[in-house]
Length: 193
Image 1 (cartoon, rainbow, N blue to C red):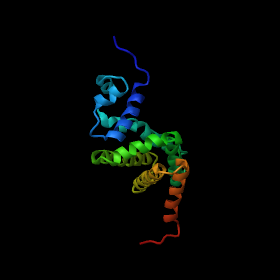
Image 2 (tube, rainbow, N blue to C red):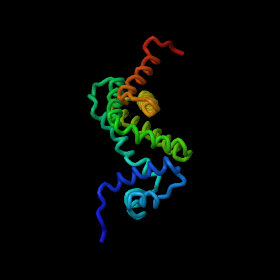
Image 3 (cartoon, helix red, strand yellow):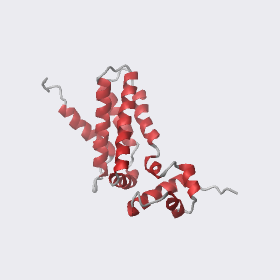
Image 4 (cartoon, rainbow, N blue to C red):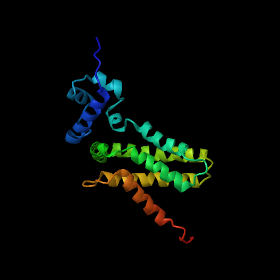
């Protein structure tokens, strides 16, 4: 008879992060993750394709936040307003109670070249999907790609600051500051090449 295990996925994720951070990603097996929370390896694989997926689970929800913010923007909104709306939405996706786990996750990723590559690929894919959403709104090229890549870069820089030891500002505040830096860089007073 199969036992129902409440919150198994969340328990597996928490255990995996703990083991990855203390023992290392490569040194931790899926079986060890499952055993550490009293589950079977089979249960682990019912929830995750492999141990990397523990770190990247929820990526589609993350991307959807970006897309929903673009779709929810008024049709006549200026591009900077759409970008600000997207950044505000994705920043709210990471409330302060997620910071500790996000720091651990990022530290694990930074210690493994294959995981760093996957994280970079995830962000590149995000830029592509976001550019397509902006084009669907009627934005021409290269503006759509520039807006998408700029949005992704602002988020990436803000997120890295949010994860720094000792940082306690909300991600929304940091993201707003980084966006302000970008806006200052490309102020209307900039000269042509």
